[in-house]
Length: 62
Image (cartoon, rainbow, N blue to C red):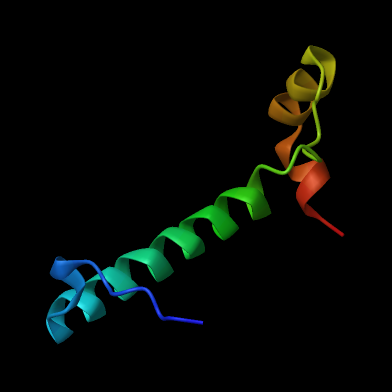
Protein backbone atom coordinates (compact mmCIF):
# COMPACT_ATOMS: atom_id res chain seq x y z
CA UNK A 1 0.00 0.00 0.00
CA UNK A 2 1.87 3.05 -1.27
CA UNK A 3 0.97 6.39 0.24
CA UNK A 4 -0.19 8.97 -2.27
CA UNK A 5 1.99 12.13 -2.25
CA UNK A 6 0.40 15.35 -1.02
CA UNK A 7 -0.35 18.13 -3.50
CA UNK A 8 2.50 20.61 -3.82
CA UNK A 9 0.64 23.45 -2.05
CA UNK A 10 0.14 21.25 1.05
CA UNK A 11 3.81 20.43 1.45
CA UNK A 12 4.42 23.69 3.28
CA UNK A 13 3.46 23.45 7.00
CA UNK A 14 1.70 26.83 7.04
CA UNK A 15 -0.40 25.84 4.03
CA UNK A 16 -1.45 22.64 5.81
CA UNK A 17 -2.47 24.60 8.92
CA UNK A 18 -4.46 27.13 6.90
CA UNK A 19 -6.17 24.34 4.96
CA UNK A 20 -7.08 22.53 8.18
CA UNK A 21 -8.43 25.75 9.71
CA UNK A 22 -10.60 26.39 6.65
CA UNK A 23 -11.92 22.82 6.63
CA UNK A 24 -12.75 22.96 10.34
CA UNK A 25 -14.50 26.32 9.96
CA UNK A 26 -16.55 25.01 7.05
CA UNK A 27 -17.59 21.98 9.10
CA UNK A 28 -18.62 24.24 11.99
CA UNK A 29 -20.63 26.47 9.64
CA UNK A 30 -22.41 23.44 8.17
CA UNK A 31 -23.15 22.09 11.67
CA UNK A 32 -24.57 25.44 12.79
CA UNK A 33 -26.64 25.71 9.61
CA UNK A 34 -28.22 22.29 10.13
CA UNK A 35 -28.74 22.97 13.83
CA UNK A 36 -30.91 25.99 13.03
CA UNK A 37 -32.41 25.01 9.67
CA UNK A 38 -33.11 21.29 9.96
CA UNK A 39 -36.76 21.56 8.89
CA UNK A 40 -38.34 21.30 12.34
CA UNK A 41 -39.17 25.00 12.55
CA UNK A 42 -42.59 26.13 13.72
CA UNK A 43 -44.58 27.58 10.85
CA UNK A 44 -46.99 30.05 12.47
CA UNK A 45 -50.08 31.19 10.67
CA UNK A 46 -51.13 34.82 10.25
CA UNK A 47 -53.59 34.70 13.15
CA UNK A 48 -50.95 33.45 15.60
CA UNK A 49 -48.52 36.18 14.54
CA UNK A 50 -51.20 38.86 14.85
CA UNK A 51 -52.13 37.59 18.33
CA UNK A 52 -48.48 37.63 19.40
CA UNK A 53 -48.00 41.19 18.12
CA UNK A 54 -51.24 42.42 19.69
CA UNK A 55 -50.50 40.89 23.11
CA UNK A 56 -46.72 40.58 23.56
CA UNK A 57 -46.82 40.58 27.38
CA UNK A 58 -49.17 37.62 27.54
CA UNK A 59 -46.66 35.28 25.84
CA UNK A 60 -43.50 36.32 27.70
CA UNK A 61 -44.72 35.61 31.24
CA UNK A 62 -44.42 32.02 32.49
